[in-house]
Image (cartoon, rainbow, N blue to C red; front, side):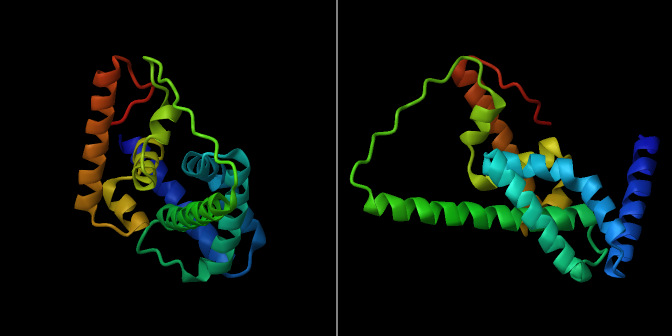
Length: 192
């Protein structure tokens, strides 16, 4: 565990140095930041937005916003938490605007086909489970189970109290267990 902590700390210190260099105008330093966070940030956006193209677009927009606002970053929170906070807010805005667009389209549609109900197999996939969650639940799950943020970091990202995040996460775990028991199957992901 000590080696993992030392590795995390040295990586964190390296990121902080890259941030300081970026603030001074070093574009290569920012390219290194992108290289460090591009894949996990894409995965996060994909799980939230549920669309490859939207996740790719979000990734570009988020890094542009980070570059434009990097002077506002203060090391009182980890850089990655600050980055995920920007991604979280961007994703919420994308989802809200998409919902507004769908409501607009629905008002002017002449034919509204009925939505078909999808049969759920006895083995529920992670994707099916994620689709059954609210946006907030998805954010908490992805940040905790996939990106391994602690409750304090998630609370900073989502502007909630750590106790609230912890409680919502415990409800999520119970929801998963209930779903698993009710459907007689297993979810192909570990939520610890």
